[in-house]
Length: 500
Ligand code: UN1
Image (cartoon, rainbow, N blue to C red; front, side, top):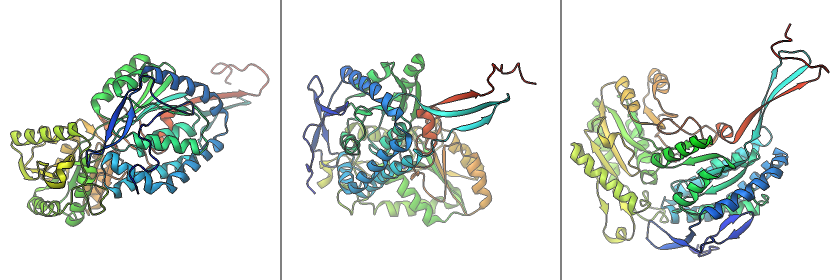
């Protein structure tokens, strides 16, 4: 399959059903992190494009909200079918623009397909509640109403899946969307917009504006007609968004970092734990919010686990993810690489012991891209910076523990609370751990990644602000509860007063 197949050199914004160049004519290169080749050009739009997108969305939303939800859902169903048909094409482009290996790219596109069919089903539910009234001949119910125009801001690490987690529930609930995708990975957004168009979504219901956070993102926060912002990305940017939205009383849903731990108890199936750690720590080169970056191992298994991990890590193939034999792809860009390098220096300076990796791969084929060797630190103390801060790369810190209680305490002793996992055969430990681990997602006998789209996705503490993506919980972000009272008594009944 050719790299440029059906692909324009210059991507365009999608506003009010039209493909438009940015008004200022400015573009930036999009680079394949595996080869550093330029793939396409992405528009650098600004305030004007955001304003036109909001205007189009506002207008389109009025009619869209009146389309019966089961019909709105049919569009999503068609989106799912087209995505399915195009799965391989989308996956290859995803690998090229993001770097994740093809197998994982296929998995990510599958998440989007699953979300389409799942949310299409919601078109025939969108359940509200009926509730008895305190008065005679009066009916009470609460229904989900769309919020209107919603703004979504999506990251480069899951450029298509996270876009579907946010846009599909928004659309099925009767909203219109203004979407700013990450500039590193615009092809997935461009392709998804084309799919919406082909599936027959009325113009203006989804609008894609490419550009930077400081121009397009900031402009979205300023728009009073955008009633909800749903953001996935870094903690720093998320906090900035939260305070701006707070000032404007704009609803905001944030999904940010993680410092996810795998706990290995003394009765664990060690081979399974090794597999789980490798997959969740080095898959996507550790560039997942759910990536495992700490291993809390019972001291009795520490030496064995270190040995097994080092042995398996040496076998990991690193390179261009389009090659099916490759297990670990590149890091997204130079900035990401620099951040990882800086944490290696921090870990060494803090006195952690570097057992494997810790360097940039710069020889042969590797010098063509941004590659970092899978890295293992051991004898890490829970309060070291490498065990506290999100690195967003293939770096794992091993911390020995004496008991489940200690593991839970260390797991919970970080700023974030996204995902955690425990390997044990003891049913009592399973139930205690799922109760006590302070994270939004808990896995038993599996690594920390691999959330399924029909369950809520998100975390506690610094990971977010209490909202969830995915699952039915996503509908809470994109709808307002409306309480409706219908009095059929024929007289004015006064609540709280006319109660006998
Ligand atoms: C993310 O890293 O932001 O659970 C999303 C997982 C994937 C989604 C990750 N299904 O690892």
